[in-house]
Image (cartoon, rainbow, N blue to C red):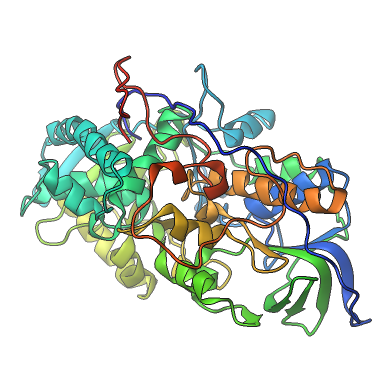
Length: 539
């Protein structure tokens, strides 16, 4: 959502390597288990993309084990309310944006955008600055503070770039903001703007976020692709594009896709993987790919034998898994401005309390739907997801009535919200990097243990928190394993076989470590205003 301009520069990469596959020793398999070359745990973006990468190299002996009764992962929707004809609307409870299209630029195109165009997905442009601002007294214009924060952003970038290029210690995003001059102090309006332009994107507070990699994460998506983002309103559901991709290599009711399959235990070694499920069945595979969320790993929903090594457990524990909760209201009228997409509320006492509202009744989205939703993240998500619907509805209605004091705000005719923290196959929404992170630490989150591999948005060093991050990681892990099975490695940047891992961590990231072997094959630095600093640029 950043407005500043820029583009990425390629860095010199370590020459590509192909790693030898571990020697496979014969073992006695359980004759009652299903047998396959590659078992893929999870049918979300990373899982489906990994399977497609395998199929592209003629590795078709795989099984996809999916918890839900459909593929799509955290691209989850529901039927909500009704249109004038009595038909329900489809609204997205989870992933909703195609972030950084890469359209009409000289750079690459976001693959999610490419695939969305193939199915003519309805996704109007999301304009973060189509916004009206409010506090507890009603409409109050403080949009100038959004511009002020954007002006500070270039200072944030310069500071983060210096830290990375000079091998200094990462710090919290709050510390980076403070040292760059942005200090909201006790001003509720400045807190609301900061929440909108940071927390609402990352599902984490500035205090809990990495400064260096928070900036880098924005650069890779919004400078690497483009600043334009679209919001899916397609009534077929956002996951339509992924189902279309799956149909390229899977048959209808393909027996290789095992729906409603809950994995409970994984036994891994250097020669194979054994997977047990909740119904007592099992799968034996030469290789396995876990694409379950970081939240699932952190909640010990799956047990591992042997226990994951300390370096892997430490990586899983260290990274944040945030929660992003949308709270939907439908009314019998649209009483809010129909020419705005967003509405920002500055609560006088509590930062992040029903701060961000978004209209679906706006032209180009679902006009006439009379649907508006609030989004809460972090601690507010945990609090709200733990309470009952009626309490949450009453809180939201009280805020709307403060925002529009001259209007008699009616009771909603439909109301719903998900509880991501309590959903066993998710346990949250998406990942974020904590303060003090290094690329070595994150590489341990990516790295395999024996023949058990991992992939998902959390494993992406460049695009963590985004759907396209899951796509790129799924593609790489599929190509790495296919390269071992077929002996042809098409993953040129970082080779095939085992991932790098670090049993001894260093406190900072040296710039030479920014390479494809650590998941960051392009530089987080960009060229600003056509001027290149020989010592580096903005991170």
